[in-house]
Length: 410
Image (cartoon, rainbow, N blue to C red; front, side, top):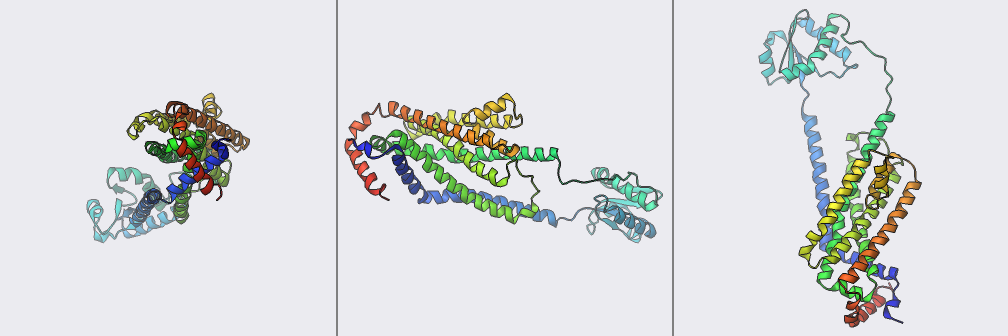
């Protein structure tokens, strides 16, 4: 019996995954990897709080009223009656004895006026910058009409307000779908490159050839893929926890967003699953690319087509999400690399669950295909059909002894 029979593919993959995961998570670089996005979240949250605080601290411009005293009171009373019906700014009564020159009142730093109403109710004059007059002219006309005792220029309508509507709910769900696609793409782009850099580094150190001589190359690819996926999900858990705390603290400032079609808990679960599938699919391609790169310098050139492909998939998903049920949307949902994006969008817009079960099985099949093709290409082009195994027989025995003694027993 050969030494390779000691380890099945999944046992060998588990050993490689645990080795890579432990080496990365307990390194100082991983701490920096975790902290980097947290700084971005902290800066974004701090900027939002500062902006909200600054907005709250700014007084809303007022409508100045410098009419005779009795008319000033009538205007203030009319404004108080209209305020429950329409959104009116504060009306500032100005004693006519202090002066009624509109330019002086607008420039007076003791006030915060956007426009000034002078003259009289019979012959009112509204002064101010052109844009301010255009914005406030209708409101002032309503106030003056009410103060005169004449009918309000606009008739009242009986309304029956509802919290939401089908159109607004669909629009919100479409926004959730597109937001999920963007977030999924950004995280995949950010994290998938780790697979490439790890493989190229070990290839440059000849470690990958030793591993390939000791265990099946398929197991090496699977182990590295799942190790990096585990690292990525750990990072997502940390970043998601911090983002969740920020959202909870700022929940009062957030608008109410209608729930996606499958509900928020299942949508978040599907997001993690589809992130894993998108990561494994593009990661298996990056592994193949990394195995083909002779040096680290060549990685950028060789990986460029894969990066462009990922961008094209993102644009395809964003284009197709608004055409649900169309041939292009169905094709994007079937194409393995864009399937995670499209099914996540469907989770936001449709509540059919069997789609996701079928899609996840379909994506797992293609991950297996990509891994198999990548491992075969690596064997044929880099290892020259197993020649490396005969040249490194001693290293193979030593590595197997280490794996069997130190890993399988734990």
